[in-house]
Image (cartoon, rainbow, N blue to C red):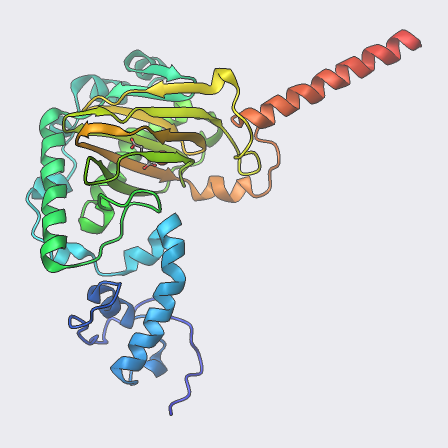
Length: 350
Ligand SMILES: O=C(O)CCC(=O)C(=O)O
Ligand SMILES: [Fe+2]
């Protein structure tokens, strides 16, 4: 038996290596994933039997994918051959961002002006820290919905298992896996980043540099509601695409840092937002929220979890997040009150 000295994957793929076909496999991961991953195998493993390689790769996938379900490790995924190669898109034009076709004029004007005032002119703030504005044209929403239905049909026909949006949404698709990653990158870079800088000052100078873009689907035979959670994002964009539905309101319960995520909610932190097709909400990922039941009809939303690696790195060295965490702020104020009270006492006695 061949001894494998290193069981670590290569950092970059061996582009000369021709992977085996894994189409006949009925495993929980797409055959495509195995073919792509094979290029990352340690050199000594390439000559092993197909079964040995499958075993090795499956162990890796099982180890990483529960984690990926949560964090959608995008660097890992982007190394894999995109599923796009196999799926014929309905609308190729969705892959290239055409701002006049995608966005409503008011949103475009605000982005072009790029000032705090221009953004404030187009938003409403249904609850503090949640910003809502008209964003997508009806035609674009319809095209995106049809594209998602096209993906669903293809996945169903081919009996593929695709990555679902996250651990809580079991329906919908990760758009980044279907050729829309560059378009969504541009959407984040050019259109969301300036707005995020204005409304979320703590990430002001630190760029949003990656995203997880997906569609969530609700209806009688899909997900119905979404439990209380925080997103794995610094900033979340959530735009309703349609179709027709009742219910599905978002509820918000205050922004919290990791340490305080399970603390109680104060009355002033309770807020609601009702989705309207074409309208977006932008909120911090750490803003605790959930979606009430979509009681009839079908609701599809485009979600982008936008992340900043620099911000995440810096957060590791901080303990006070009172500029955005409601609980850090409450505790800080309490400390200040106590300090003032103590000073007064000392002053009186002396
Ligand atoms: O259903 C919605 O609108 C909310 C979805 C959401 O919060 C999420 O996917 O993180
Ligand atoms: Fe969410």
